[in-house]
Amino acid sequence: MDEQQLLAELRGLRTAKLGGRTASHKPLLLLWLLKRFVEEREWKTTYDEAEGPVGTLIRKYAPGAGSASDVAAAPFVRLERSLWDLSDSAGAAIASSSARSGGWLKAHGAQGALNAEFVRLLHAPDILVAAIETLLTNYFEADVVEEVRAELRLDLSFLSASSALRRTTPTVTRRVKTPPAESTVPEQIRSLPGDEDLDFDTRLRWQAFAWLEELSKTHQNRIPSSQLGLFNFEGHRIALADQQQGIRKPKELKAALSIKTVYRRPSEKRPYEDEESSDGLIRYKYRGTDPGHSANVALRRAFEEKRPLIWFVGVESGVYEARFPLWIVADDPTNLQVVASFDPPGGIDPIWRPLVRRRQSGLG
Image (tube, rainbow, N blue to C red; front, side):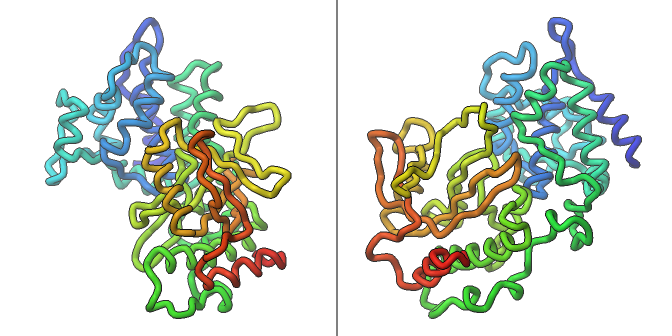
């Protein structure tokens, strides 16, 4: 498959017409997959992972989608096999002609992946951009294209004239430089005293802070979101920020690792107003309205265990400044928020004090 064949495949997706408009279920699934590729270098997904976000997109932007919880099941199964491989948890192929419900797909561990030829082509940024634009312009009305682009946060400006998504080290544009290897992290923060006596959580946070400090220098405190999924620690690839939500708790940890505030233009309203107030404190809103939600519990655990966090603050679309270390100093369930500060609370582990001093002296 070459570029022209790929774009022809994308233009030729089998879609239905509902009320005179193209049913964009498959294009929305593909756009979500391409967004993951841009941000996380990921081209595989389980149905369980995809059902929520893809279903939300379909119900919002596909005509006649209905309100079924498994509205993403049909495109997940029926997406063309020239682009997509689908199997169950045992590796047995699932035919595109199958009529499978979301419940069946989850029960059988259905997992899909963009096929190898597709992925090979996507490593060329110009082809990736062309694929996304082909889907947007061929399956959505002109007045909806920018809305879909904004919903998926498809800011592709940093791909222009670069090889940011290649697995080899890029040699162009400083802004998309590959994150530093561990050996390039300054010795004074890379060396963790008593490493063998510290728990996994503490070791991970320390190295994440060190990695982000170097990354921030490389990108002059303007880190592309695509870089935040590339942190490796003790054999684990761990995304430091959640692509869809503000609160990040990796599965390897019990407490939240980071919080995120997305960029909005002055005229736009954020989903949550998370700001540093005049008293120097940050009031960060819970996810939703349930204090018992797992993300809010993870924040509370970071508070109780005095675990330092990272605050990713959007400075433009898809670009963040990393501010750390940050501590939650109060839990405020009445107002559905936590209160955080760069000034550590009493009783923190002494190993964090060098990082606090570095921040206070303007080095962190």
